[in-house]
Length: 247
Ligand SMILES: [Zn+2]
Image (cartoon, rainbow, N blue to C red; front, side, top):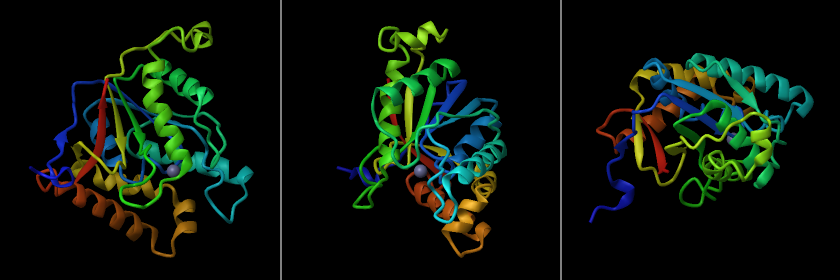
């Protein structure tokens, strides 16, 4: 029997028109996922971003009030590089996002507004695989996204959304989790990789605070490394991996 860790990844479904990516922080999509998003928007698909926070607690040397506006700007620029024009912020508090009905409701509302068939989020599990611990915001948001994909279709769970004119949307067919330690599917990243590097580089202030390395060398090295590693399980093509939950 083949070990799950070495098995080949399946191609992601491509019979869909609209995707919504919902993550905790500015930069969450750029650390690996943006190359897939570039390839989807190239193919004429609509992708929108929703961020639970503005990442205001993400830069040690910058106080949150100033950091929030800067990271919002960087995120909007970063999205534009891969063909995403719509970026919304839910304004939960960075670092202390709470899993619960309030978060599920905000995400269900976003799903009802955008009516996607595919929803994308970041790793909701305790670790990145092995013992490399995940952060609490990613776990809270990822779990809430998986739950809200169902909540969005049920008119009785958050009736206040219907009263606000957001009709139920039961059309989410898959939730794809990026950065999972247990990926099942992948997307060819070759065509989107250069823009993914530019998209990560748009978070320049964040990256400069994070590393002394030249930002472009850092971004290219990291994303090329991820894509090649995933490619070992996807026909040796650079790729972005997802754990796919069908609904
Ligand atoms: Zn994050």
